[in-house]
Structure formats: structure tokens, C-alpha cells
Length: 348
Ligand code: KG4
Ligand code: ZN
Image: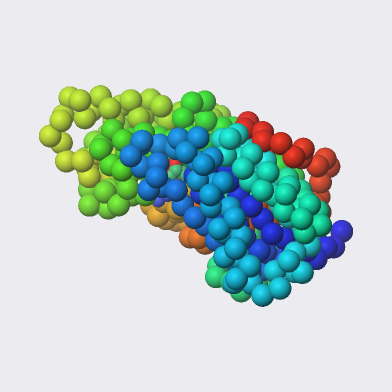
């Protein structure tokens, strides 16, 4: 099926209020995307004093930000309403009070401007974020970019999983984390080290000044012959190490923790790539912003002559452009429409 749709997308699953306008065209096998607008309003400063996202604060901020961002879009994109063919909104997974704000806004807008509305899965958005062109230009043959079979490492604040993909809309889950997600581990270790929220980017920054060989932290699940992960033991090791060595250089600890996490993520992904004879490795989700992780997977993929795809920096962490892609792909390929209600635990 071939389609051509300009999608207004809305994302409020966590602490970013985001809206985008994306021109989508092409088929399920060869979709193309042109990002016309991409606005992300981060609430990090508001949640930072609490050391994590406070759901009701997130809800309040989304309610305040959504009409503001929509007004900005109206100003930036001439003839916006006429251009919209479809509205896509994240219905899960995420924080339900936060998700509802986006859904309610989308429903009201859909009724007001008389455009259809579909629900999108946030994790599918991450999975497809590597299809979005860097910058605003259309990516030629973004289709041919992913060659199958492919292995996708999805690493965010709430999820860590490996997928085996045989087409853009066909995959099976090989394994996921048994406890903390990778991003969650970065955030918790950040807190242990006294770094501001979110810990991920702060650990990367601190680690750049440290020695990754300074502390030999455990590599959880590395020797298990499965594709499951576990990060809570690694986090606890950092906690105990700091308790027993309170004056130890924090950057060395950050670098050693990061090296352990990157090691496990890389080795499990490469093992899956080998077993399933992957032609492409996709890295996505907020933790895909991590440069040492990108470098490690790029190097190993290169060694095995496998194509490596990571989203452009503006699409690593939460954004709405990826939600337009998820909406478009589900429209082209989909089985069942997602109900218009917040589904905190929606799976991929
Ligand atoms: O995908 P995302 O924006 O939100 C969720 O869907 O969860 O991911 C956010 C997560 C946070 O845990 C954050 O610390 C982590 O991604 N993150 C990073 C980096 N940038 C963001 N983790 C490691 N290194 C980074 N540079
Ligand atoms: Zn996310």
C-alpha cells in the first residue's frame, strides 16, 4: 500500500511535551519522511529538584505546554491546518496521567479541525527513529537503509530490549531487562554519584574525564546464553563501591560504570547479530544518545561488515517526529487500531 500523509504528531508520555509535522510517503517497504517541524519542550528543570519525573507535575506542565506549542506551530508553518491529513498521538507506554494530556488535546483538536486521529506506540516510535532524516531534508531511500534481517537494541529510560526484525513491521522480541532499564541504571547511578537528573548525559560527561578501567564492575548476564539484561546488580555494585571508597574519583567510577553497561549492551547485541545473521543493527531509545555506546556498536558492526544505524541526535531522546513515523507505519501495515486511551504498559 502506498500513502502520502502529512501528520501532526503529539508526544507526552514522560517529561517532554513534543509536537511535530512530518510529511510521510512511500510504502511499508520503502517509507520516506520529511520533517517539516519538530518542537520539543523539555521539563527537565522542573523535575530536577526531585531527582526524577513526578507524574502529576509532568501532567500539569503538559497541559500548560500543549496549547503553547501548537500556537508556535501555527506561527512557524503557514497554512498548518490545511496541510494536516492526520493527527497521531502517543497512547503508551508511559506515565498515564501524562499520556492522557496528549490524548485529550489530540481528541479536541481532531474534533475542532475535523481531521482523523490515530494512536501510536512510543516504543515503535523509538524503533523507527533511525528512519528520520538528519536535518530537515528528505532521506533518499530511507527504505533501503535497513537491510533485513536486522537486530534492534532499544534502550530508553523505561525499556531495554533486543528485537529480531525481518521487515520494518515484523519483529520478535529476543529478550529484555529483568529489572532496571539501561537508562534507569544511568539515572540511578547518576543520583548515587550526586549528579543532576537525568543521569545519562551527566554520566557521559563525567566519564569523559575518568578512567574506564579504574574499577572492574560486574558485567551482568554477559555469560548467560540468552538475550536478557539485568542492570540492578551493577547499580548496587556502584553503590557499595562508593560506600566503601567514599573519596574515590567520581569520574573514574562514572567511566567504569559506563564501560560495564556499554560492554554488556554491545556484546549481547553482537551475539544476536551473529546468531541471526543480521545485515543491519539499529540502536534507538534515549540511551542511544550515549556516544561511547554508539562508538562501541559502530566499531563492532564495522568489524562484522554489518550496517549500523543510529538516529540523528535530535531523535535519540523523546520527540514527536518519531510518533508521526510510528503512526504512518501502523497505518500502512496495521492489524488493529490502538484504542484512544492511555496504556501505561503497552508493549511493542
Ligand atoms: O527515550 P527517552 O528519552 O525516554 C524514555 O522513553 O524513557 O530516554 C530517556 C533516558 C534517560 O534514562 C536518560 O538518562 C537516558 O535516556 N539518556 C542517556 C543519554 N542521554 C539520555 N543515557 C546515557 N547517555 C546519554 N548520553
Ligand atoms: Zn522514549
